[in-house]
Length: 96
Image (cartoon, rainbow, N blue to C red; front, side, top):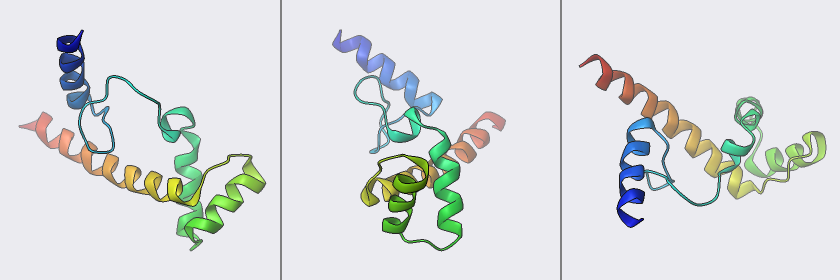
């Protein structure tokens, strides 16, 4: 089973399914964005309006019903930024 997890991690890394430390993900808990993909657009929209992480967290709780801590909002923003960079990197690798 250990060897199959290693293979799965490698294949998921190539697909872009990764953990926060950027290794391939094959087990464990799903992240907020994997469970609720609509959070990405909401958080980006609120951040562009100039709201702080705490304010975004409170607005998500009060208006949209998502209970997300301000630390998680920061992690989600980092994940979004990293995913954009990773998509560009994957495109470059495909063209070469």
